[in-house]
Length: 405
Image (cartoon, rainbow, N blue to C red; front, side, top):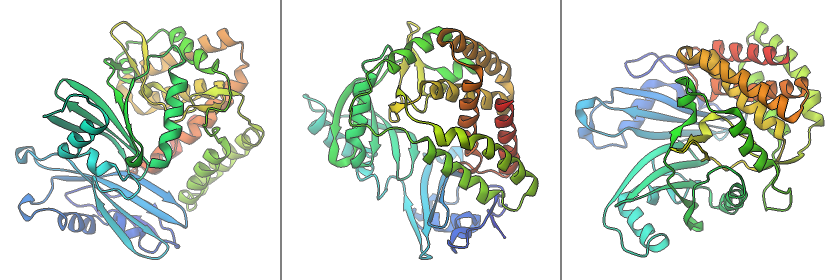
């Protein structure tokens, strides 16, 4: 049995294996139900959307599932995109929420509305009262985090919305990041009860876009920044160490579930897992690291300096994994971004050679880590499912094999 998003005028078909412990999971992929449920939450004059797309799929197998959707309207409607979430658990119920309502992010609803932002800014940010506010959603992962741009007159800030329990850890990672050679956004304010931290805006160009256009950075400058992070003493910063075992096990379980009816793909998965498991079992943190380092986490400033804009995962980890993760993302982009594949492949080779030469690492050790990071990146095929999810997952597993040689 498969879960199907029925082909309609809204979005194409997606087929994923069902989960017997979650009887309502197929409902979350039923296009007609999704459209009807969403329209019930909107004013009648909104009409029907032009397109609905599955934005994110989070599946804790046997326990719960969450699907978020992005809704777009015809250009002549002048309506912003809408986001809403449907989730289910083993009890068989389905819960709906329209952005910015989020039970795990209590500050999001306030941070997403201009009136709420004005009140927060005047209490937590500004010494002079603000009068005008513009709010723009940048990223949203339901129940985990959101990033919004707040424009208060001439002041531009980024509000990072998280679970309140995560604020102290984020502040600790920010403190570590300020000790590195990277440019880091300044801390502008904090609302701990709402789980919001405001950071200053950094002017610059997204490094991923520059690489894909062939404007490759100096790999030594990238490694300078990383080495300065690795040099921060691994003392008690109040940050939990990175758990490679948990990340690997979560990805493996996801793949095993979704490939259970595909014998050839399951054989490839089992062979890859057999090779990776001994390394995962023996791995331990060796020093401070970023733990999710790749091109989309960085900006290039007007002076050429690199700015680190995503800090949440900094903590005790593994320097080789930082480079391996960056290489894996480049390899993934080279495979799935046809227009920029040559640029990504070229920088992959330049960064790999520079790191091996500078740090005298063993090629095999770096390749193992790139393979493991690629294995985790393959979850993109499931977390952002499209009709060709299995083909993308198969292709990703072949990339893992390529890394392992």
